Length: 302
Ligand code: 13P
Ligand code: SF4
Image (cartoon, rainbow, N blue to C red; front, side, top):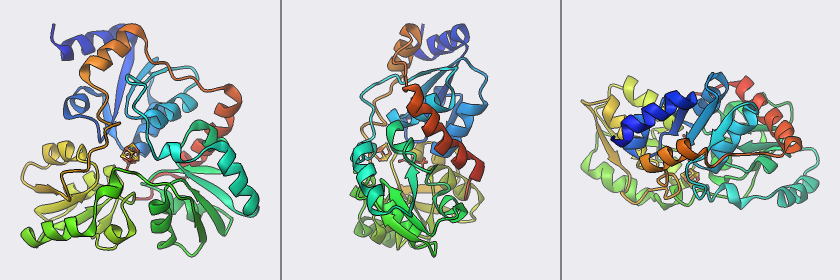
């Protein structure tokens, strides 16, 4: 039996749903029940009636699904699919920083471990970071762990933003020169940039958007060409959903190796063997859920 048919069969047997991030391999996206950005995936995890969620993404995404759904089994097909940015902050280092800024609210990007979410006032994603910050009563915000996203938010709000020094090694590879070189060949193209990019890349963007924001924008825009400054996996959906438009990657090096670990084979193994189950200690889960629930209440910003 081919892999796709086997996955469909196992999904029925297990009452399972497959959620996939926009950076997953094309064949993994095609077999998923829902493909989206971090915000959309969190929403979907809550609204699904399936008893098992196979999460094709990285560790913090599967953890968020498990935090929000204590009664569901959440499986991460590849345990080594871990976001390096999420590993750039620990609960102990955050506790020390919080002592330095006792009046600041802690806004944590979803790209964090559950233990860091548990110490935060509210989570955000790239789709609602500015809206989340502006929704808070505090004027001082400790923004963790992505300094590029923090700096982008700082440029969009009057509040004082204290950035953490983490970053996404994949988005960090994109340089302004890469984008400008493509612009020379495609002068009419619109430049869509993910806010995890360096500030000098964000500065030359026509639009700064989450992955789902880019998909929505590209569909609605009258432009025929777009330079895309984010992980290459997004091009699969951009091209599939907009056959008449051209999407040019800012550079061909922007691959997140962690996002690419999940395969059709590992989804089959996950469903057959119930692996790898994500478990969060209950005291941490309850506190982290508060921060995620608050974020979901604020909604999308784009
Ligand atoms: P979004 O899809 O939420 O924009 O996330 C980008 C990302 O890097 C997730 O790891
Ligand atoms: Fe983490 Fe960057 Fe990969 Fe997203 S693209 S999972 S932020 S390393």
